[in-house]
Length: 312
Image 1 (cartoon, rainbow, N blue to C red):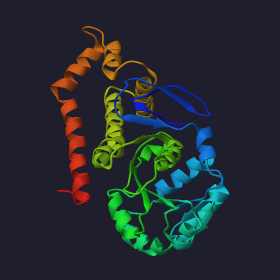
Image 2: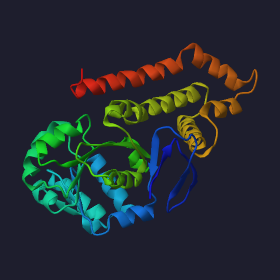
Image 3: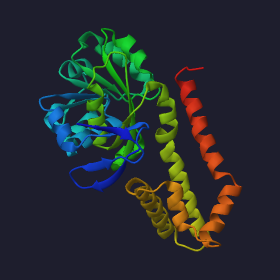
Image 4: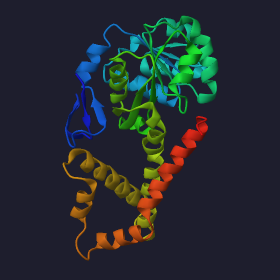
């Protein structure tokens, strides 16, 4: 019940679901699971989120808001009692400081702890791991085989790279299968991640590229928005007005790319009149190598991702 062709674009979005149609057949896969299908997949299941920090709580809220899981079937753990009280009050989820019990009671386990805490966390839950449980790791830079070895018993592990835009329900995430996952396991992760944006399936060897592009990418976009705002202020606009215009301009441009049939280069040409203002601005961007600079930034981030993961 999932669409798995490449480079899809959204042609309709409503409060209930989005529809994707084929743009460029035969390329890498973009996956979207309609909300109704996701709800059916998770009937009777319980999810434990180990780590109630920013991304863990974002996923919890997304799953509840899109009715993938009822709040009573979501367990969130954390070492901070105040954080747990806040999550229980705001989301009405179950909360616990006992990772082992939460994992024992869950069908799906989302690992959302800090990378430096993952080994200790895995050691603490190892005794309750069994093949019926699906583990979804959003721990940055930690390969699935590291988690598999730490848990033993041939655990079903999926590695996920979400991004901060999930906070606005517009996240971009990638899912990679571990060595022992079942045929349909990826669909569960895609359904959860689609609750806070868009998700794709990739080979794990591409996770460093995903980290560099969509994981770090929001920071590049924020710099662009900040720079456009500063330019507007320099030209006499009030800062709040310049910021609103810059943000909406970037948002609208992204929406056109998602919803239109045209390549970004074609959309750029639509705005660029011969000898006009946009052509003058683009000339400066090309002279100052904006393309090469952005590509170099993504490449540097990918290299650093490999270094952090211990890959030579």
